[in-house]
Each structure stands twice: as C-alpha cells, then as structure tokens.
Length: 400
Ligand code: NZQ
Ligand code: ZN
Image 1: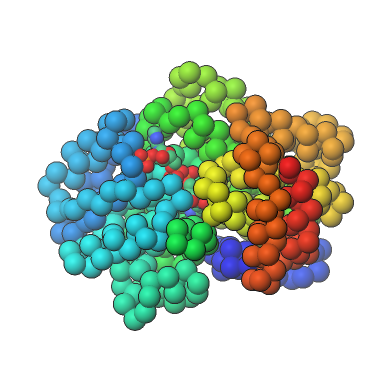
Image 2: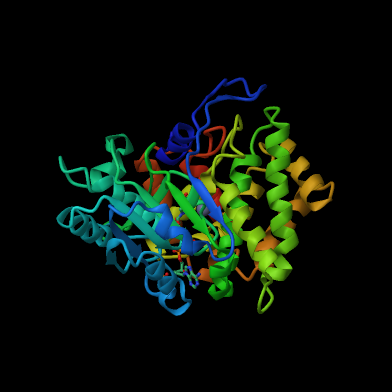
C-alpha cells in the first residue's frame, strides 16, 4: 500500500471490512479550530499566547503585495517572532532544512505559516523535524512514524486548494533526487487556521483554477470509488462538487464577489479535512501519479490532476461504474457515464487548465520513468489496489 493511502487511513483511522458491502469502521478526530471571515487576521494577537517565541513562515512574497503581511505583523506587534521567507510552491526539503536549523538555533516554540498550501505543508515538516535530531530529517519523509513530536503550528491560509489548513498532511519535494512524497503525522494538524476569504482576491486566475480542480479531485478520490453504503458521505461529497460547479463561472470573473470566495474557501477546506472520508473507500491514484509529474517536470499540482483524472476515469470506468453512474446522474444530471467523464474534463478545461500531457510537453520518456519508479517501489494504487505500473502506463498513454 502506498504511504499516501496508508497515511490517509491512519489519518482518518478506519478499519477495512474488506467485503465492500458495508461502511468501513472508523475513528475520527480533527482538532483544528477554524476562524473564518473578514478581518479575522486581527485575531492572531489573542490566539497566540504572548510568551511564545514564534517563527512566521512565508512563500515568495505575495503576502507583501496583497496586504496580508502587514495585517499579520500588526496583529502580532507585541509578540516575539522571527521570519522565514522563501518556501516555494511544492516546498523543497533543501529550503525547509534552512528553516529547521534556524528554528533550532532560535529555540522557537510556535510556528505560524502565512501562505498557500505549500507554506503550510513546508511548515508542518519544519514543525516535526525541529525536534528530530537523532538522524537525517529526510528519514521522517521515508518513514512518517518516526515523527513523534512537533512544534505547535497554526496558519493564515491564502490559497484555497489543499485542505492543509485542516488536515495533518503535507507533501514535500526533494530537488536533488526529483522526488515528491506525502508526509503525515498524528500531531501535524494546525492548532488553528485563519480563513479570511478577502485574501483570495489577489489570486491569479490560474491559481484559482488549480485550487478548484485540486478540491474537486480531492472529493472524487474519496467518493468515486466503491459503493459501501455511505449515503451521508455521498451527499456531502456531491454537495461540494455541485458547489464548485455552481460558483465556477463567478470565480472566472474579473472580481468574484465575497460570497463566492467564501464558498470556494470553505469547499476547499471541507474537501480534505476528513469530513467526507468517514467509512468510505478511497482512491488517491491520480494524486500519486500527479506527484510524479510534478517531481519530474515541476508542473503545478492542479494541472497534473486535470490531466490524469479524466484519463483515469476512462481506463477505470468498468471498475467504478456503479459510483460513476451515480455521479453522472446526481452531479451532471446525465444518464451516460461517458458523458459525465467528458463533462468532467470540460469543466477542468473551462477553468482554464490543460487536460492532456501533450499540452504540457510531456512525452513517452516521462511515462516510462513514472512506470519504472512505481515498479521499483512496488506500488499498486487505487481503491481496489489493482492500478499496477502497467495500468498507470495505460492511464498516462490515454492522457496524451
Ligand atoms: O509564494 P507566494 O509568493 O506566496 O505565492 C504563491 C505561489 O506562487 C501564490 N499565492 C498564494 N496565495 C496567494 C498567492 N498569490 C496571490 N494571492 C494569494 N492570496 O500561489 C502560488 C502557489 O502557491 P502554493 O502554496 O504552492 O499552492 P497550493 O496551495 O495549491 O499548494 C500546492 C502544494 O500543496 C500540496 C501540493 O502537492 C503542492 O505541493 N498538497 C497538499 C495537500 C495537503 N497538505 O493535504 C494535499 C494536496 O493534494 C496537495 O498535494
Ligand atoms: Zn491535491
């Protein structure tokens, strides 16, 4: 089982019944406090105890141009903090190591991530790695169970997409080896997350498109699998998908309104915080294949999903047919699964993303390398664990 799937299972702990006839047993916990709405960044001063030594982490500077940085600094003006800048999209282990060393030197005891999913993810790794001094920090990525403790972390999320603001996951890249792996620990949930929809106004349309597609694919990875009698989960998942489809035209406008940004932000959080994962079977093959495309070509996460997911549906259509038909009827109001798959791909295209490998100039050599990597790691993917490296090849060939 891939570490990503395994981690999801550990995250929203459920016990597999294996007969695919009934809802899986599960345990659920999500300790993150959400603070949602206009002006909520100003609450930071009260949310973080005054005696904490904070390291605030940032990306490449978008927060300086959209006013978020000033709001954070104003809210924390009486607190003791240092700043760490430069966590890049698809956060790099090499960059995060610098923050880990700084955090140890400065003896920080709280982390505040201010940025998109990459800054939050990178900060989750920093938080877990600062106390890990018994070996090389990369060991935590290869074996997540080594992460036993963490520096408390919170965030101001500026890009709705990953759900990182309310889950215990992160995805970390290593430039040196062109690898990208999930990182999950029980302790990595943010203590609190500030979600101010007004911070999303400065997002480029491309990032909004990637955020919508990422959210959409998170939901279908948990929903479009095997029917195991999860009526409530299905309705919640379909509700998020329908909300995304409904707000998409507004999101594409020059200046979407506040209510639209609220719905977008909340959909992203609800898509990957465990609330639609209770008792369901999960897929995650598209994500695992997408991570390889990013690792090898630096493609933005949402773009990889827009390319892989429609192809995966075409190849796995038979296996997914019961849920696909339900999806076709309830989400797209059609009776034909092929039309539903086509509508899914069109939706991603209408958001402005490419949906074919040829559009991003990825060819057979990359397909071969991804298949080789999965074979070497002995990875099989999908809700039935039957997406072997050969099936991955079919999916990627279909995505050309
Ligand atoms: O770095 P700055 O200057 O801040 O700019 C960022 C970055 O260039 C910019 N941005 C963020 N908020 C903005 C903004 N620009 C203007 N206005 C704002 N309000 O957007 C760019 C992309 O940011 P990034 O954080 O990389 O995007 P995203 O939130 O989509 O995160 C992607 C990463 O999350 C991982 C992905 O694999 C990828 O590495 N994921 C994390 C998951 C999780 N933690 O559970 C699950 C997901 O499936 C995903 O894999
Ligand atoms: Zn994702």
